[in-house]
Image (cartoon, rainbow, N blue to C red):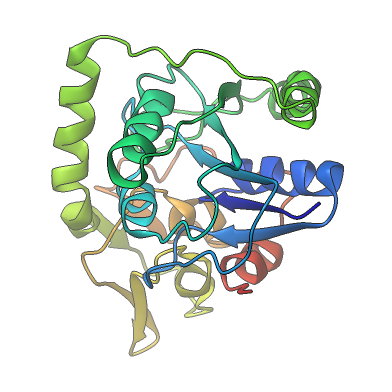
Length: 261
């Protein structure tokens, strides 16, 4: 059996899920959807999974582009599944993937599941303190989801309200240039972790400071992983807590984001 998992992750939540399911399935490849190149499946797989976060009640822009443009190869009859990680409301995230696969590849998403994880969009709110408890709950809830994938279970993918589609479309249309609101304070040491951690390579270092290239996904990895809290959004996040998944280091996220077959 040969399996493959595609993931998109900024703060490590979805990578944690992808790694766990990869270990459980065995003989499983793992690829970041942050890559700009069109991806082609050159092998036949028994299972193909997509693991990604909910951004504004829908799919991240990069995930939409990746799934739309990928070459499925000889995998029309493969078991396709998805796991959407979310903090507040998963919205139409799973249904959007269902539509993308059906419209662009004539493939049916066999199984879709959501997984509540630590909510970490620091741009909009102060984050909770109960990281350990929420992480344990997420790990526990992931077990039956993985069992469902192992047993090739199927379910019906339902759409939610249209207003959520509207909000996500607004987000996807505007997200690329939302990086213009990032600020860099004087505590920046030029360590370049922000550049290396960005899943879509939206940051470059100029004169030892990060510069954004307006290809942003709002994953806020740059804010969360900055060791000096030097990166902020409209100066509103300076005093807020930071979060990265406790089991995913920045070095590990960088490694997996740059991994290729």
